[in-house]
Image (cartoon, rainbow, N blue to C red):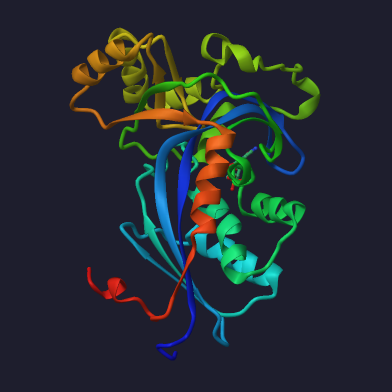
Length: 308
Ligand code: C5P
């Protein structure tokens, strides 16, 4: 490729989520489970640098601080290139901060980041409905990350309804080094078909006191160390302790900053991230600021890729 080829570059955030409430109602005829959940974006985030050079043949590549087989980033990029009928070289640098296999939606968030950013770099528009369809094709949690904030998720988790932002919330996210397989966790729930399931209504305003995560019982039974951690979080003062997704991350809320600092001190040997909730408005302005500033660089490939 010629060194003077115009290259477009953007660096975008890719935030984690927690499920503030998660009910698994029944197994559907398509093999997925019918959910009622409240999604929430967090301040914990990966960073993805994306470079696009509009050259003849399409070539997608990725580098970064982790090696992820069958990375959703590349699958999302393929989907965008196809939908936009675009050609060229796209290179990603992933700076992974969100623990993997922790129910924090890191892979899904990365995929959504590509769906949002790559069309801008290509100079192509993909209709919102099409983006949503591509997102759902990549995974049940991906569509939520097109919008962020607090949202109610129905169906597979892909039918989304925005919820009012809560007042600023901060908490601690414990990320144990335990990788829970999501399909195994669903199997362990052993849900029957739809007819037998009662209707469930979530109360978004009362998620802290009335929310549950249906995966806690089967996942804690399989990984007693996670249940021990949840109990320990309670003992050091957490008012709300809830696992996210199918685990293994556990989110906890404290009455005030002093109680939270005390807990941090007590849990020194555990991998804990202090986090805040990111509202939909904050999420969207983060995105807007990144994409309006995407730069044109003249050099391809950039030197930095070979420096590490
Ligand atoms: O959609 P996603 O690829 O994230 O789903 C991973 C797996 O989790 C699915 O193959 C399925 O076993 C399970 N799943 C489910 N019901 C959902 C979401 C996921 O059974 N609503």
